[in-house]
Length: 590
Ligand code: ADP
Image 1 (cartoon, rainbow, N blue to C red):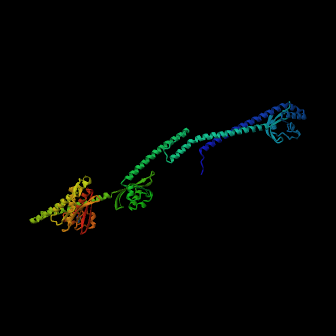
Image 2 (image 1 turned 180 degrees about the horizontal axis):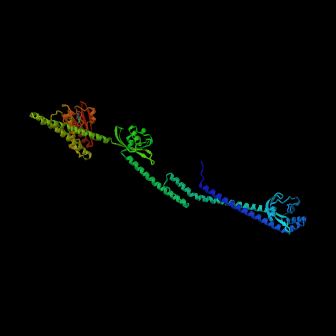
Image 3 (image 1 turned 90 degrees about the vertical axis):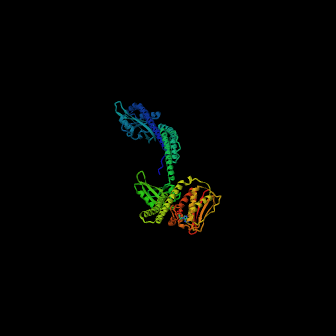
């Protein structure tokens, strides 16, 4: 992967390169100017020397005093350290201060000679192969008094001085450049570090923010831009923190609402994977608390009707509702509502399903319906009978007095029955309304209370041969509402007498068990078949309807007993064996 250069190195190297190039450029320009100046100075110097000799030389050439001329330039050349060469117009060398002129080749092609031929003066510098060193040459034209070209005088000097001066200067300049670069590097390092430091601080701060430490504050002393960047980042962190806190707060609130809801809530994604379940839903479907989020609904809840409902919700535009039956710990009735969750771009993100358990409500509703129909039925029977007797009495005018009397007796019996049913119903609703909290109770001797109930029962069933045996201890006491509890005992004793054989007794026992008061009413009569026992305390439930009616029963007696016992904070249970007898056992708190 391409490795990005750090800003520090970019700044540092660019500074260095820039300064290095600038210094080198300046040095190069200075050196060239210096060299140029030195060349032109030497050239001028040589020209002056040539001009001094020009007149004399021109005369000598005119007079063709070549040997004398050669001698003169040799001695002058030695004295001044200058090489003097006399070149004739055709390029032949007529004299040379340092060489034998006859041996020298034609000098007509030398650049300084050529330009002197054209402009009267010329100069050039180059390496001389004959002298094996750099030389500076100048040539001026020699003309006679008549202006006729007589040749050129060329003077030259070695450029060793310049080379040495340049070398010495180069050394100093190089040293200077070296120090400048070192200084620049140091300054650049320091400046770059200074510039980079606040950026590094900001980078570290941003890393802390990314790691979740939004409390961190950035302090920088950098430039204005960096300072404002740090301020912006600080502001961003504060806002981000506030947003995170508020969304966390919202999330917790939602979680608390969802957890506290009695309704089950579950959410699925577009592929029917369960992404959320609140505690009520988990309880409802008996899902482990550490269930795997993201599993298919089919793996978590095995209920085809719910699967179908979710599939329907995911494709429906409107919210969906249905009443579904689940079989978890018995039958459960659920009112299910579903709504699609849509993403910002309108694609389906999933669905949210709310399950409302209305099993209890459904049960109560069923009980209410049954109760109404039972009451109607119970009331209808005596009313129909009474109507029938009344119609007979009205229609049949030939009835004897005895017959009329018989019908009227029947009417009286059924109207008593009607009254009994209505009174029992009123009793029931009164006891229900009283409840445990409102019921007035006081410590009462249980023995006396049982005695009272026995007497009431015996006066109601004078003809019975069944005896009732009270074996409760006289000391036994319990917190009771006397009239109501006597009624409960009466109902139990009445049933015991009604459903006993004439010879068998009814026994009432009492005692304390595990800090509770127990009262038992036992008979040795016909008993109740096992299948009826669970329903025996329901309103209007009777094992043998016709026998119960004959005995004047309303089917509400045991329901009243149960409600009275419950209003006392107690419980009632029944044990019975067919043809052996029945035992009702009341347990009361202290
Ligand atoms: P009922 O007015 O018909 O007696 P109850 O609510 O008192 O109504 O009793 C419900 C039914 O329970 C009765 O119809 C009867 O069949 C049965 N039952 C109640 N007590 C006894 C008992 N001691 N022995 C046998 N059956 C009983």
